[in-house]
Length: 174
Length: 161
Image (cartoon, rainbow over all chains, first blue to last red; front, side, top):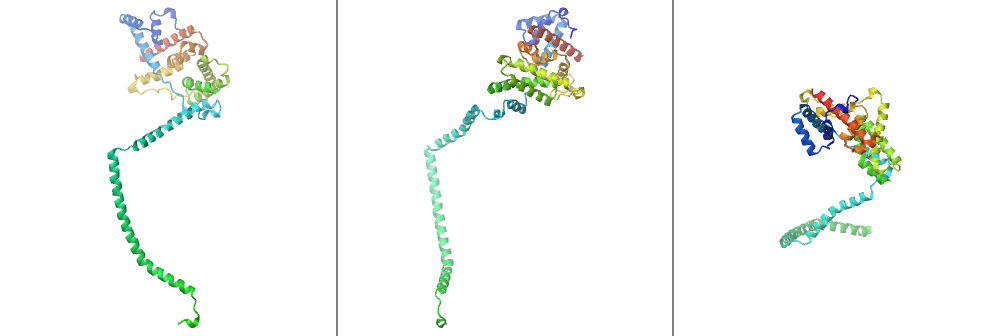
């Protein structure tokens, strides 16, 4: 790059360089723009410098990938990937959030409104009346089923048991 | 020691990564270079002044990349997927096309101009850090950077013609 001889450059080159550095103040900028109105070469250089500045600031600056971060931290030893005390504190705080929500909701339900109590009572009474009816029906069905089926079974079973226990001599048999 | 090292990793990994990506133009090689750089930091952390860690890292990264570039065979020069690609003929004057062109133009600059533009204009490190990284006086950095920018501006004009 020896082709650039600073001695031969126009005076405004230093200001354009300051512009690229972001170090040109408003007054300097205004002076440069005023000069550019009567100097086509300066106007062109100014436009090119601005375009270059925009292009340079828009160049991609990629972030390091996660796996690289893990490797870099791993250089300090295997213990590095274990959670730190700060991590545990943060985890404990995060875990507290649902607990607080549950406690608040329980606290809220322990003090129901009058309307909620009334509605609860009505629902309970309705449920109890259904239970009563179901109980009566079920009892009747059970009773009837047992009466018919069990009588025969119990009688046959009893007679058989008695027959087995009482062994009569042949002469008593008919 | 570990805590400080961890802070340095969090603080500077992106700068080291980005510089390695620009210089090496290869993702896996840049990863290896970054690891070498931080292994070196871990080994030398007691001798590196905390205020100079950033320029120290950038200098070691640059040297590591140059070592790798020297070892690399000419035919293994890779197309960088990180850089914006050339646009098609329909958008020849688009910003994307100009960015791709600029990335290639910066990569083609000789040293120390290429490193100066990346460190100062792309990564926007301070003049003091850039000077420390390149072992130059801040005045020399300004002069070289002035030349590099003029060269880029001239090439931008030629490219647009």
